[in-house]
Image (cartoon, rainbow, N blue to C red):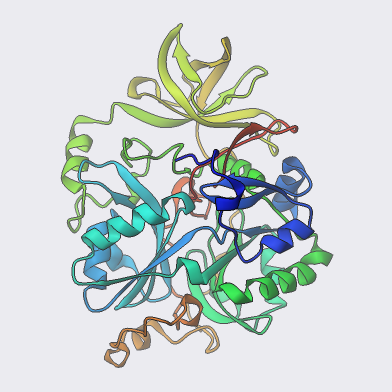
Length: 449
């Protein structure tokens, strides 16, 4: 989807728009929103996240809730992963598929309790996803929480220290892809240990009127640690280094999750879901093309749509590319013929009529050091109640329709499975601005995740 021709007057704004304007952000249209693409330059912002911490406004993303005794079954039917693997307080990366196996969207699914679940969906897909979920939710109640919810991402090696100074939650007890409710700077917030940068970090759900106060508190607390606001431009280069897919680039309704290398999140031998029969058939015959990482071996930046060639013949197409700020060399993601997808295969990218040598390499291009896992037991009372208590029959009643996501009781615990692609810890998300930036990067997004 591209709405670059939409008038500025028609664009939506997040509750943090005035903060971005005061910080001097360069604003662009993205998926119908007026969003900050950068504040000080994409390269500098990228390096800030890798070495300190960055704060992102991703309030344009959507939150869609499913409620009631049929909610779990609806989530299972709608998604390719196995929702039975989720306990209260767990997050799962998963995919909404069409009947023919094409990707409606890639999303994160939160289990609050057995009768309350919510999807965090890509910004450009909110309306489409909402219609799809309502169409296939059966007897479950579907509520769009997007207009009332703001989302702020705090990412980087200093993120836990910054957040820890503002909350009584014991963050070491919230491992990757778990969430908890608590107060941050005195505000009720749902804290999720997820992100889209390849770094450790958190995504903070808060009701929209409180977003400004939360942003200000985080900026003030993080300043001594080097925290800076980060725009969608650096968010794109960060996710590309981590090889996290972006809807509209690596994923769309004509692409299957198997071709995109997302088999880990597709449970073909589990419960039935929309698209399973088509994906089973594809698995049996083999996907004709695969998503691969490319390292360019000569100067040149591959961009979405550039052809990939082998011995002069076209064998694929680039989906995303950039000059990696961390590696200092150009990298790209591309779909190529299955026979040419093995690491070490020598290919070329046609960069504006000039063939640039490239090699298929393993992804992610960047991987942060894994933190030492926290002890699984001794969940502190201020974080949440134990899982077995949270799923007790006394919690059967579905929450009231007007209740915010940040008001949820949750129980972090568990397995470490179900994290998103590339093994870097974060789930995917975007901007749609085809302009090439002065520092050699490009923002070309349509959704988020």
